[in-house]
Length: 159
Length: 111
Image 1 (cartoon, rainbow over the protein chains, first blue to last red):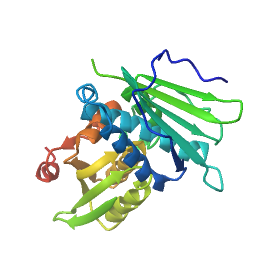
Image 2: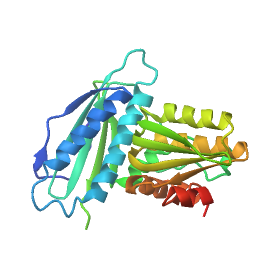
Image 3: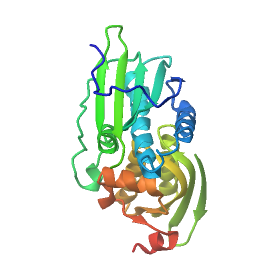
């Protein structure tokens, strides 16, 4: 499947070189440091649209995608694979693109919280995809012909 | 994630957490809560003022701790949660069962 069109025509204002992570939970520290570096490079004039709350929601969503790849795409693998993470700032949004070579994602993309039930039956997992969708504006997944998984998350600026 | 346990009276314990409660630390955290409950603690207060980030794995571990505590007739309560954690509770609607208290004292009192 080809990369979906996003409707973003301009070149990015800021784009860090992609971060390659080993798909282990220990690498989450490097992931957070990379995001901090990115937020520190925002040009003047972007800080009000991308305030701390905005950045926090984007970070929360991006971390869920990384964790999802570690857990699901590579969870059954004997040796950890890799994840490429690429952040770009455009004039009206920030995009995060994730690439891995783990197994195909066959879960739901839509927001689907575990059913509200009594505490003893309450699910301990299954909220990640809902968090991503609730914290951002767009989420896309596709598997390319070279057997790579691609996740793309878009968060528009606050109005 | 770092942690420190403070034992109180009347079966209460405060688990002071520092750092990120996420995929990397959720399992260890859950083990700590389980151990406290097995040691006779009935009310576990998670002090989260120094927790910078929580993800769905961390949230799941907290839900697991709450379930385990309630099964024993006890409780697990949140105190001092920061903005990111509060947003996560709102986004997942878990705020209806995991009420965040501002301080340890309020959490201990349960109101």
